[in-house]
Length: 281
Image (cartoon, rainbow, N blue to C red):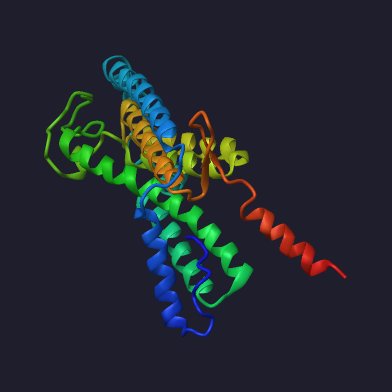
């Protein structure tokens, strides 16, 4: 969300709210303007290709060599002692993550519409970053839902036996929606998006993503190859969303070699200046 400077402070609150909301959406589809977007696009294509090739090879290897062994080592479904794992795994549920992010975005717009000047600019700068995080999760989740339907892989022990090659394409039910893991997509997309904006959180966020991945295995919700595929879809999807934002100069800059970096300090620097001004004699 850019900070509009031509909205009259005398306009009514509903009018300002409507204008801000419209511009927040319009900035996402405006024509790309960054002069280095071609370099960034080539870098994205190269990295996505290599990551997808390596990930696909790993998924196939796990499916053939390890999936059957791993699911046979896990505790049976419904084991009473697994209740903490069942609670923990919900922190990677796409509906919950997107609901929280969407709710924060709505509240931010509602508050920003009643502010002016620097305060509004600060909130809208944060809003652009939250838009990025929301879409970085939503886009790969949408892709994953299509893949689940097309592939139709049965979850562990669906059909009564351990069979990692139980596929019914286009089946469309939750029992045959194992590949890719939606929780893994959500967790790794969220980890990548937050780390892209705030690199210091990288270790924490990817630790969170790995923990969510492991809970899906322990609960026999997925095979190992499912969660690896989910992590791959989440990462590549979030990378594509980051390029979309950078090409429109939203939250990111593009270096001469095509590397995309966050606009560090755009919000925090203003906060520091505001705090300094408030405490000055």
